[in-house]
Length: 264
Ligand SMILES: Nc1ncnc2c1ncn2[C@@H]1O[C@H](COP(=O)(O)OP(=O)(O)OP(=O)(O)O)[C@@H](O)[C@H]1O
Ligand SMILES: [Mg+2]
Image: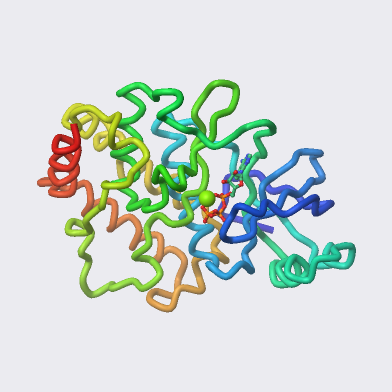
């Protein structure tokens, strides 16, 4: 069992279907609570760090007031592969026994298109800020990773955020310099001046809040990190990233504001 996490854990009872659009071959599963979840497999090519990013950034977004489907841990019995005719899916299931990540499935949702339905300046500005903070390079107009459901905007797929964790440089922490290329960001054309939003949101992302979301990540997904070893040392490194990113002066916010103003 999992000792660190406050996320709900469910057990997958049936693999329903692959979601073919997703690069990581996410699948739809039914679980023992009779819920349906979009399963992000631990055994997928992108590796476990994308699941860490899903939790850290998804749960941070939720705490900053964005709508994010419930994130759960999904216990998967690799024997489910037996009933699966597709060989690629079979291999994925076999490679993913144990804990995986699930997102509550939003039935009838579809890709959000801000051109068809304008988001409002407030939401657009906040989302641009969040993605720049977390270095989420995966929210473009090509690949919005944002769903419209019950007439509301829901955020999904934060696996590409925090990309530096794929090769940590613990000796040197360039968190402040990491540039965020906003050129293709879904919300850039709709965002307003960042100053107010930056002031408010940066004050809300406290070390306590960051610790709270990091505590949701299972130890087993952190202790494989070559750069650090101990799960709590890895958590401390993420803390250090956010602290450095939020310390003044925030040059990334200045560049972001310049990109936004140039666009308008
Ligand atoms: N909670 C959800 N409810 C309904 N549909 C979802 C949900 N999560 C994902 N989807 C659908 O599945 C698709 C793939 O999911 P997601 O973007 O999370 O996977 P991915 O493999 O990381 O994708 P990619 O790398 O191609 O962006 C989404 O574009 C969306 O259409
Ligand atoms: Mg996606």
